[in-house]
Image (cartoon, rainbow, N blue to C red):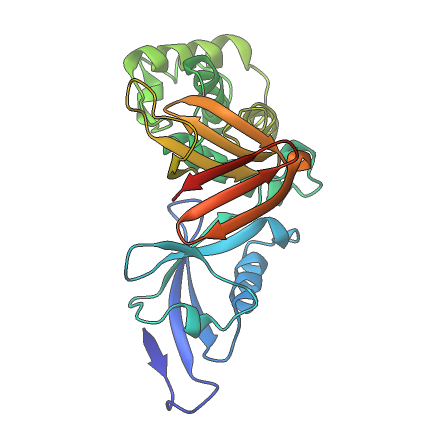
Amino acid sequence: MFKFGSKNDITLECKCTVRLLDDNEVLQCVFHRDQKGYHLLDYVCEQLNLLEKDYFGLRYVDETKQRHWLDPARSIVKQIKGMNPIIFCFRVKFYPPDPHRLKEELTRYQIFLQLRRDLLHGRLYCSQTDSAYLAAYIIQSELGDYDPDEHIGNYVTDFKLLLKQTTKVEEKIAEIHQLQLKGQVPAIAENSFLRKACLLDTYGVDPHPVKSIVVPQDQKGNQLYLGINHAGILTFQGSRKTHHFKWQDVQKINYEGKMFIIHLMFNEVGFKL
């Protein structure tokens, strides 16, 4: 942690790095020891000209390798004890149900960048057909209309788009790009991406490995994952969605030790974290 000033000086400054959703961009920031999390988040949003701030947050990894969201209401320095250097990641924290309907184009673009990351890292899990369409929208946004004189051979392979990106799926991506997306300018291609992504079961889900106290492990030994999004609480076993508890069916949620218990209108389900 880089500090400037005396220990008891409330104007003591700390330097930090904020990694943005575009991996090629970072911000070097300074905050005072008495400032709360929202000061830093507001500053980052201001640099990005973002007006709709509530969808975003700053994430960091502590000394035990656990990920946390920076609490906007608490002191920054009290949350990041022992961190050196101080590194935050600017990320989407709350995924809107219909991102393509958001008023601000810059907000939509940042959510597009987040979902592009989710697709690449396997969090936005979907069928091979859906992933090919999503990737094709990214290619259209990056390259524009297909030009046979310019886009030669397997041009898709120059882009890292999917967690499991095979030659076969690259050919499908190129086929969609060449035949179906002509005329879509970058903003339209990105909006098409958002429209398709928000319909997927895994949209906005940050999966956490759990053990169910009522659902046995499947025969293939696939790990059970639990995640939360705007539609409710979901569980996945391998790539298959096993439960979807809608918010209107959830009466109460308890967190007791390592037990996460969901009280439903008609039942009770527990998971061991």
